[in-house]
Amino acid sequence: MSHQTSIATLRRYSFIAWSASLLLIAFGVISLLLFIRPSLVGVHPGSTSSYEGNFFWLVFGALFVILGMVFLSVAYRWPRHLLHVLSTQPAKPMRLQIEVDEGSDHTQYYACLSDDTAGASPKGLRVGLWAPSPDIRNLIGHELNTTVYIDPKTAEPVVIEYANGYLWAMKGAVTSCPASTGSGD
Image (cartoon, rainbow, N blue to C red):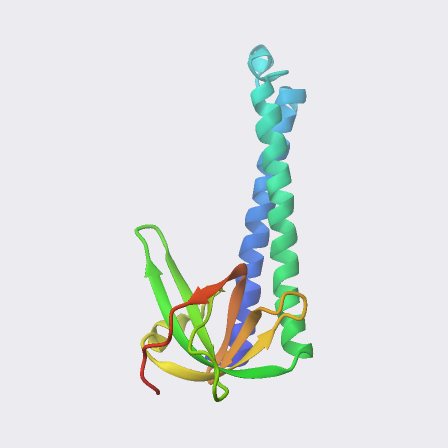
């Protein structure tokens, strides 16, 4: 996978998240309309009394609109922030190992990063990955040399550049990981 393909994958994931946010807002607006005036969303005039003024529709409508707005903001800002960090911040060499957490309903990938400089602590950072590349399974079990771009606001790694592309960090998904146990590439 090329670096341009990695950027296109990030933008595709961002568009999907943005679209889901808009759907959530639309459901919220429909719920609010059911509370205010159900006939605007096609409810038969004889059934409007079941919806109009029902507190349930107000609460869920407001909740959906607020959550949708938050998700919309994150889906718009985070990928732009990642690309900004990539283009403006200096890179730092680090070692990378990919971990996978396979659940019954999803699979989550993590990057374990350790400092590549001499005398550095073997304990590193565990970064949750967003929009993983299709070839990420090929990286599992290998230790790779990478360059990492650090977010200047949080001092956390947000973009990991390896030979075949980029890996993108999820917002706020950085913890410590155990010492590296893999062998070199």
